[in-house]
Image (cartoon, rainbow, N blue to C red):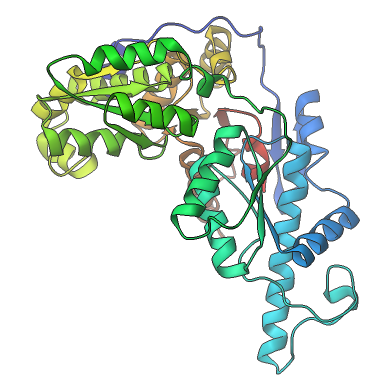
Length: 415
């Protein structure tokens, strides 16, 4: 697959990022000791251990007011540091409460056992704070309502995220629970906004007017208005970066790979990267059996080729953050980090995606969603730790991971 990936058609190159000689990094040592390398990493590391009084005060207010907080991985590190600590503290108190109840107690009393002392209280069983990707934000909000009986939810993310959270809550019977945004002002997203103009509607109308059956697969990182308008023009289904591949595979199977045109938008890089991935599968000589086992049980080489040939990608949409992964970044990865694991979100430009795709074929990297990236890093660290057990003769080594997405992910990875 390595050579196939290299031969796959590359999407348009991103503009050069600022010149990069080495990447800022946080080295995690024994007992979670942190050693930041570079001024940017130092600034991030400074917020990973927030003041305890801030943590206790926020948790106290969330419990008393029955408020839940759902935040995206990309929130600023100074905010994420506090939120992670609040969640950790809640789980510590919950565990202590459960132990006391097993011993016949009635829950936490005042003093050091409770967030702020005072009267006895019950610690909610489901975390009142979660940090996750845009789809799980809605799922977690539902769980907060169902299991921790929150009366309101604060959504920390861009506008389409609060819309999605509210819609998912309503679908699950919690439409009466208010969802609050961080500010009354517009919180925009360049990717979502690229689907809100006349160009996107024109692209949809052009595909809808054709004789072929067409399905619009729209990225979840768009507004509810975009989704509704799109569905009035052409049948539309929403996907995430975690399930976009399985979504187009299933749709192609159900309607017919030769009959169905997949119109993917608005993220041009993600669409082109999906095509590139399918090119790699075809060019590498994957057998029908492997395709059925690893991709979809109802597909083979012939249907994958038909699917690849029938994907129409919107040509003018991208996220400004992922747009920065240009040739300068790629050159630094190739020249200075050859032995590192490379991760890349599906939204990054093709040059960065190709590096991670090649690496992923040997399990030396991953391409996918924020959750895919986090799970890959966790798996690699756990595997390396397992190799160096007590009395092991294995030589210790430092794992390196290139984070090919927004730097806000660092907090969740370190924690």
